[in-house]
Structures are given as C-alpha cells and as structure tokens.
Length: 262
Image 1: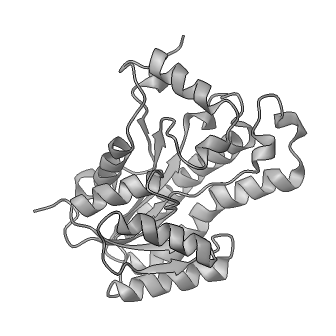
Image 2: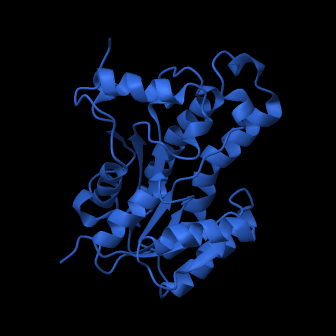
Image 3: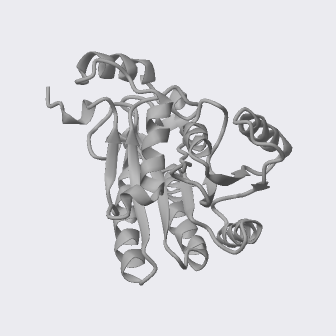
C-alpha cells in the first residue's frame, strides 16, 4: 500500500513546476496522497498554479486563492479544504516565503527598512502559526505540518539577509508549535525541511545565488547540489506514519553541506 494512501492535505506554495512545493506534491502523489492547493490571488497566479498542478497529472484539481497574510482568509480556505476532504486534514505543506529582493543583495542587510523586515517575517514565519491554528480543528486524529527552511537561518549566507532572519523565526515557530500541538492530545506533528539551494523563482531573487550553487557542489560531502525530488521524498516521510515519533525538528536535505566546517 502506498505510504500516503487515504491521506488528504493542503499544499501551499506551488509557483511552477520547479518549486519545492511542486516536488513535494509530486512525491506525495506518487505515494497516493490526495491534495488540495492554493494560489496567490489573481487570474495570472491561478493559471500558473493550475498549469503546474496539471503537470502532476491531477485532473480537475481543487485550487483556491489565498492571501496568507489575511488570518480570516486562511481560516476560511482551510475550512473549505477540510470540507472538500470530508471533514478532516491529515497534512499541511507550508512552502511560502517572501522578502523584497532589493534587500537580498550582498552587503545590504544593514540598510533593510522596517517595512521590508516585518513583511519578510509576516509572510515567511508568522503564516506558519496562522495556518497551524487554522488546521488544528480538522486534525482531530493527528496530522503532520511541514514547512520549508534553509541553512541561512542559522549561518550567514551572503545575500540571504533578512530572509535568513525570517527563516530562523520560522524554525523557532515550528518548535513552539510542535510542543503545544503535540501535548494537546491530538498528536499533531510540526517539522521543517532545510533544503539545499535549488533553482526556483524565489531563490533566483537572492544576490549571488549562482555562487551558492557552485560552493555547495564543491564543498558538500556528496559533491553536488540536491534534486527537488529528494526534498519531495523526505517530505513524504515526514508527512506519513513512518515518522510518527518525529516533531519539532529541522531535517537537512542539502547533500550534507551543513556538516562541513571549512
């Protein structure tokens, strides 16, 4: 039986068929999961997400617009998704982040204005909290929540700047959520995957991204960059019943790069 057979959940953050969320959805589909999706508001964004989901071979997918910074919209869309899924959600994938690329340049962190700083924190970190709150009523039999992070949350990556600060907040949010949701008697788990650099729309906005790819390929124990499917397969493990004892963790899928000191 496929690992995710009978599991139903919401995948948030597909931008195109190169995004981490797409690779996660692809692996989930391979293992039998049933998924629902969201897109940023607007016809253009809907077309982009619908096209990417169709690449997965999912006919007539459930897709709803969502402004993740609007708590009321988050609660409404999660309730609609749960209703579509028969009253429950087994998993949630949070794969969204944003920072104004003006400030994602080497040497510009000090110049980051307050508005840009707070926007990055809201979109990239706070939304995990709001989505967990919205998902909880529909995870009465347990569930798994997964978010995407990056090594720049704990070490300085030139050009990652305020996004690194936001990812650090995301990882800490994961731990506090894991503690509360695990002890609430519902058995909800919350984890993050720290994926290595991958050519996505958001990653290309980071100054010096090509240098990151070259450095990881040269320094990582596996001597290469990762493939999106490797993150997808790790996500399946974290969202499936094979990892029921794992929560509050950051799992690195970066060809071992995080283990190297020099």
